[in-house]
Image 1 (spheres, protein in one colour):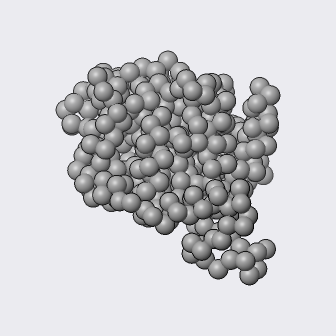
Image 2 (cartoon, protein in one colour):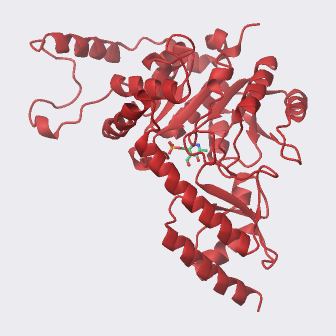
Image 3 (cartoon, helix red, strand yellow):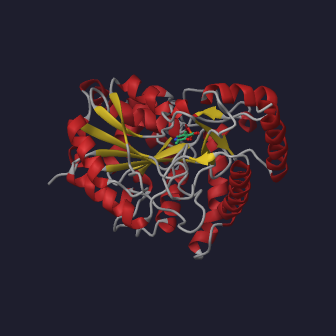
Length: 406
Ligand SMILES: Cc1ncc(COP(=O)(O)O)c(C=O)c1O
């Protein structure tokens, strides 16, 4: 049975196919001229569309629409090493990587390619920007539940919803923003099996893949269903670089990354930020030294360990002040930088009124759960909370609760 990505071009709406198939003489000439100039510095570059050679130390040249080749290669290598993929046998090379302007652009491009006129399943508790991406693509979204009331991965429920709602595109976001829910390997394998069986196209948003605590290090859906799953990830979270705007799309089908996403990026942002890519490359190269030596990547591990400390501290404070946990029932929130908490008994209003009041009176900013499709809950981010800030939050909550129940 052919997987959706085996007939990629048939999936694309006609207007997108037109962009993908249109010849692009400028980047084609520039790419070849760049290669030749490396071998022959005497080559006269009369194709360059920017001022150059005047203040070379001030210049930042345009980069390729699919990203700097050395960064694409480093991302592929780090993904192979941290996910146990062999190069050539399910492993990725640079052609399987398209760098984008943050994961946000990657996701938006994928929705445009695959969600036009289709129903898209979004996990209950979803990153709210998916709604914009689906709307821009002219799709329709449906909320789906990955877990049952006991917190088990609910494959039967998923199958029923997909068939009843005629869902063709599924968004999987593990570790999940906002709930911190993760899957373990057997669950990822089982979910991938269902995705294959139902011939779904799955956009796996794995921007928090390396921010997991309590055990499993990195776990992508991509290797379990390479003909159906397209992964999106980013340097924003794990490499502390959200402002650099570097994300990437990974696909086992290089036609998607090396052709379709490349053309779509050129048609939208033109190409990802070159300075941001250099910053990411520097950090990734440090971690690649460790990964190649079979060690935990030092930089990533230090970030992860700090995030775990903050998560543990915040969990304790929230428990002390009567907040419940929202997410995968019976499971710890084991990834991301977020905790979704149900409102405590001492708060009588809505999630939105809590968020407003807490901001003014308690000196903490939270996001109402309704922004993620979860009512009566609020999302806390510990990404910006030092240990001192967590202690201050406890003091502030103490005063806020006392004032509220007066
Ligand atoms: C689940 C999820 N996906 C994608 C993104 C976008 O990431 P980027 O900053 O790389 O665009 C975010 C950012 O918060 C996110 O939480």
